[in-house]
Image 1 (cartoon, rainbow, N blue to C red):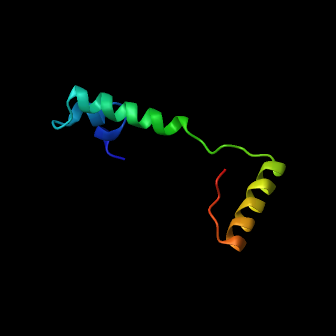
Image 2: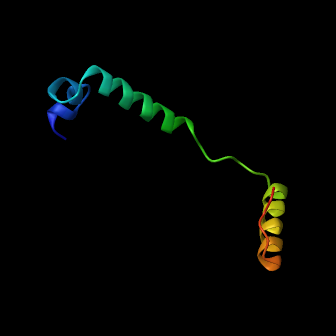
Image 3: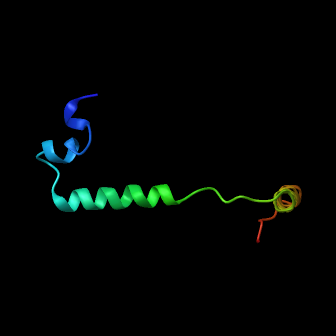
Length: 64
């Protein structure tokens, strides 16, 4: 890896990044890390599956 990309080199060696860009980028990356997939128990998964099967067979939208 290039020396200028190690540590804080990306920000220090680049002329196009200004402080606002850095702060916005870091905020975006922090927000993306905080989200994860919800964990569902087996019973909830079965309820969702059944609702989707019923919806498909009756050609109606799932409303829950």
